[in-house]
Amino acid sequence: MAGLNINKMLRVSMETQTNGIYGAGTPLGFVSDPGLGKTAIVRSFCESINHHCEVIILGRVPSIDIGGMYAPNFETKELIHLISKRLLGEINGTEDRDGVCIFFDEVAASSEEQQAAIQSIIQDRMLEGNKVPDNVWFAFAWNPSGSNCGSNEIIRSLLDRIIVVPIVSAGSLSGEYREGPCISVQEDLFPQWMELAIEDWNLHPWVPGYNHYMKGEAFHSFDPGALDPSQPSPRSWEKLSHILNTGIDGEELQLMGSGCIGAAQWAEFWGWVQLGKKVATYEEIIEEPLESPCPPDNKPDHQMAVMMNIARGVSDSGSSIERKEVDAVLSYFRRLPETFAAYGWKICNKNNPDFSSRSPEIAIFTQDYSESIR
Image (cartoon, rainbow, N blue to C red; front, side):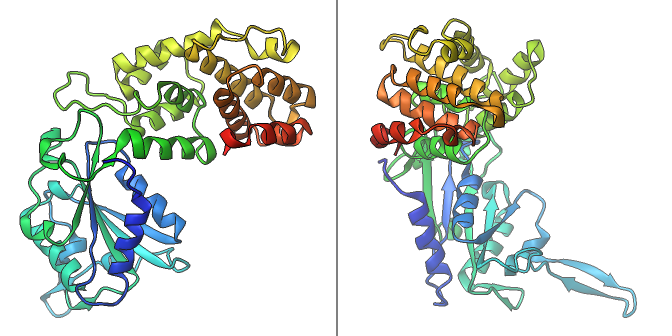
């Protein structure tokens, strides 16, 4: 069941936990295969409401944040019980925030004792005799037991106190969570990721460009039994982008690229990148925007490849970009299908903030393509 709004559910969960009504709070627990950005989802929401997101990664060793620890008092020669105040929202640098989300990650890797202690905190909103402030709320995440990530079962009493939100990709996530409503990776997460990749993130244009061309089919793939340890995911695509931004090439790039998204996906991605050498170059387009070769409508991979050529050229021009370049690019875009033209404008504007201020033709173009650009 696609079409679920993650931010809307997070807001409702946050409000039920911060309204001061005892027992009304209902935290969310995101369960998905690794690499889908569960932490990023919660962090992004917190930023949007001026809340701090404090991530606590759980494991076999008990967390001192949950149960505290005993330490010797050398003056009295006694053991004293110390607790961390992180779960109470006492975190340096959050004084200007309106609230704090305590995000417990890798919950399934923790012991039953830790889970029982967490259950008590969210149920009673007390930590070792200290009341959890009303502006502090909780969220959870873990990998399913079939993901080969060392996950265990979540104890029943903790599950009864949270709402499980499965994030499902085609052909992934173990059967225990496949029934009922869920977040769809391809239909819900991918469009949101693409929007952020274009508007907010400093991703290498090849990465969102290729995923845009693939319409989400290369966005995520997880097989816990795969021999290749690396597989495509939102996290691995972002890591690949940072590697590409360094300018590395040659066999070193091949090794590191396949190490991010897997050998098979890298081969397809790199083959698409090489199309850029077979289609119109940025220099050709600037010189002859109406005569430069234009990919046919039945070659969307070529159309997206030429978009990436333009994006890199616009980026390399930097603040010295001239009106002639902008006008030439817009003229070439008008020869392409509307969706590609609108996407091209977005990535050019993203890769060079001066692009949209160099020519009055920008206003005309954005008006003509307003529906697609929006």
